[in-house]
Length: 355
Image (cartoon, rainbow, N blue to C red; front, side, top):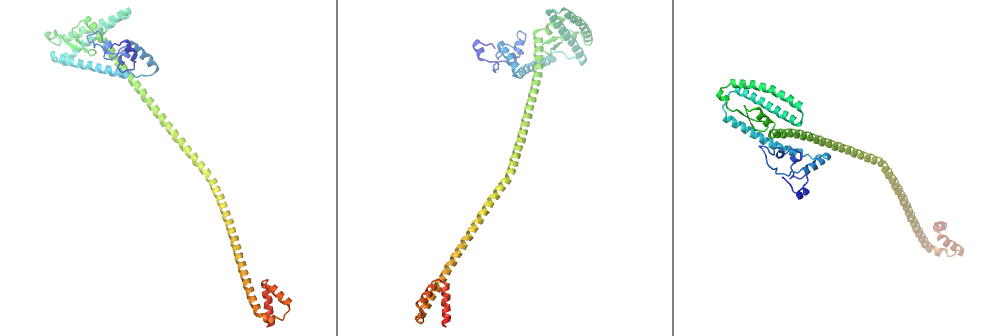
């Protein structure tokens, strides 16, 4: 499909509308143009400028357009092979049935005709290119094949009736699905095998084989790259797991190293607590002692006060009998009685002396 200038500026060679077979120079629409099997204009874009852009870009990176071109050529060749099988079936229905032996002899004649036609086409091509010596050598080979063909035709003629031999036995070309006659002359054979149609199909089939090989190699390479990347990822994951385990081990070792410190800190805390508790106990014991002392003091003071009160009462009862004493004795007794135990003892002594 042709493009205008405006469309050419917008479309890139990576566009789906561009024919990938054209970019790889193997589109059947270009190869078979002007032949009996001209396919007409391709439904996708053909542009030589886009092909040049693709050739430049393919040197820098792999675009993998071979897969699209391979699918295109495979579908075209499959259709051609289907037509060849239909033509063979049609010939088998229209032509007379012959025995297997006669069929094999006729097949041998066809093979020799095909070989002659290919050699003549090659000789003509070399002559057109100016390689006369090689062309002459091929023509000498053609003469040898012609002699073999003559012998094969004699065998085929002798194996069947003359009436049947005069019939044109056709054969379908396996390359381009064209009809070939058993009695075709060398000129017609040369025109067929050296013609654009037959050579075009040869080019398409050879290109298809090349694309299959290229696609297989690239797919194998991609699979290897994918496998290598997967192995690298797995290796990195293993390394990361190992590093993670080492980090956890280091953390555990650090935690183990910290445990004695914590224990020492805890023991120091326990010691401080025990010292505090001991100090509290001492303080409590001191307070209890002081309280007991104060209680004893209060109890002693109460006892002293009770004894003093008792002694005063007793003294008041004994006062009539002691009125004849001197003022000094009574004053001393009052002074001693005010001093606690000493006064009580003296009073007891006095009581004992009076008795």
